[in-house]
Structures are given as structure tokens and as C-alpha cells.
Image 1 (cartoon, rainbow, N blue to C red):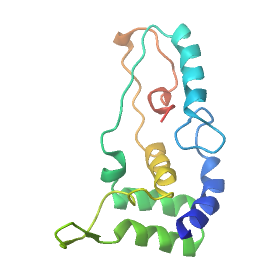
Image 2 (image 1 turned 30 degrees about the vertical axis):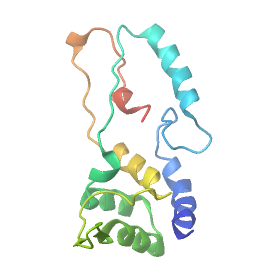
Image 3 (image 1 turned 135 degrees about the vertical axis):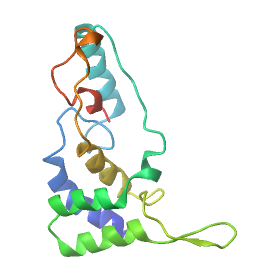
Length: 145
């Protein structure tokens, strides 16, 4: 319940910085919307690059994520909750307690919003011109995340 409250609060602010044609875990957007745009782009491009980020939710750096969160989220109470959820220790099946410095809450409703924020802050690398005709937008490769 608390994650939903924070998600609803920060999502309003973060939606303003996300690209309009980014579809992953976004309110009012779906995978079918992304497929429709991809179909249109396929007629304009000579090639398509598809990729998946293995274990994204498990490997997001808390340090980098919190830097982005602090930049865009002003409510102290939301920052406090987010940091606590990220750094909460994990207990394994054997009972061992493990400290965490990366990853978002497993199955948490806040995790997709945080992952989108993290992806938004990744460096932008234009694709090499040797790959033929491609979009001039540096965000092209990440736009459907």
C-alpha cells in the first residue's frame, strides 16, 4: 500500500521527463502501443535492433538510482521510503541476512517507475553510421523500454 502511495506521488513528476514514445510500465500505454509504433518505424528504417537488459530490476545501482531520484523527487517522506525499500536487507531461504547495494524491491509496484527513471539517465550513444540509415535521435535504442 505504501509503495502505491509513493508511486502515484512521484509518477506525476517523472512522467514529465520520460519520452512520449516510451511504453514500458507507463500509465495509459501498453505493449500493443509499442508494437504499433515499431511497425511504423520498421517501414522507415533499414534494420531493427532489439535488446533486453538481463536482470535489470536485480542490478540497478542504488547509488546511481538515488542520485536520479533526489534530482526529480522533492518530497522528503518519499525519498525516505524509497531509500529504505532499496536498502532493506534480504533474508535467504537458509535464514542468512544479506545487505543490498543494488536492485529494486522484488515485485514492488514502485520498481518499474524506478527502473524507468534509471534507464532515462543512462548515457546516450548514437549508433555508428556504418550501420546504414538510422534515426538521428540518440534515444532511439531506448525509446521502447
